[in-house]
Image (cartoon, helix red, strand yellow):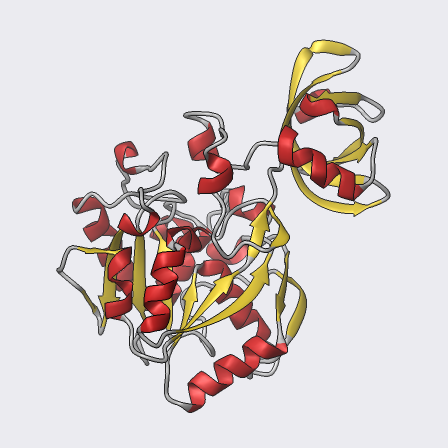
Length: 352
C-alpha cells in the first residue's frame, strides 16, 4: 500500500490554531452503520449519541512543557531550540534540537529560566543533553521555563503562550511524561463528564506517553516501510476488568483518541486477549489490521499521509475514511490538535 493513498487536499484555513471555547462546543462528525450523520452536532451532544453502559477509555498522560529556548554558550549568537523527549538516566535527556548540526559534543547551552545542558552527541534525528540538575529538578524548572510542545503546524504560525498550558492539557492529565497531548481528550470538561455519567456511561483509563513519533512525517513511499517510534504505556488490571465487564454485558468499548486505541490493541496483540500491559509499544495500525478490543473511536481530524490517518482508514475502511474526510473538508470542520472531532464506529466485516 502506498503512502500517497492517504493524501488529500486540505485548505490551510481549516487548520485550527486555538481550541473551541468552551471545549465541548467543538463540532463533532458522527459516523455509524456505514454513513455520516447529517445533523449539525457538537461534542456537547455526546451523551445522546452513546448508549447507557458504553465504556469510554481515556489516556491520562500529562504533557510536559518540554520545549526550551536558549543560546550556545561559546557563541551566544546561535539560538537553540530543544524539544525534550524523555530522561534516560544520569541527568541525560534525549531531545530534538535546532540547529542540531551546530551543536558539537561538549557544547553548553544556556536555556531560558536558568537551565544549563551539555550536548553529548547525536543519534539520527535526536541529540543527548546532560543537564546541570537531577531529572526531578529539570521537570520542576520546565513548569516555568518550558513552553508547551505544540505541533509544528501551529508553532510555524505562533509560539506557545500561557494559554496553551491549559488548552493543551486534558482534564484527565495525571501521569507526567508526554510531549504531545492526546487531543481527543481535549474536548472534555467536568460538566460534560457529569452529563456522561448521568447518562450511564462508564469511564476507564490507560496511560500512553505520546512521544517523538507524533511529530515525524512519513518519509517513505510504501506504508510497510515506515518505522514507528516506541512509546511507553500501561493498561492496568482494573482497566482490563472494566473492559471485560462491559464486554460481558454487551456494551461497547470506545477509545477516546488514537493513543488509547493503540495501547488497548497493543495489550491484546500477543494472545488476542486483552491483558494488563506495561512497557513500550511501536504498534503500527494500517488497513487490514484485526481489531480485538475497540468498537468505537473518538478522534480529531489528522494530517494527510500521516500514520494517524492510516489508523482511521484501518478502523472504518479506506473508502469510508476518504468519504469522511471529504465531508469534513466540504463542511469546514477544523483540523488537527485544536480542531473539531469525530465519533466513529466500525462495522463487523468492513473492508480494509
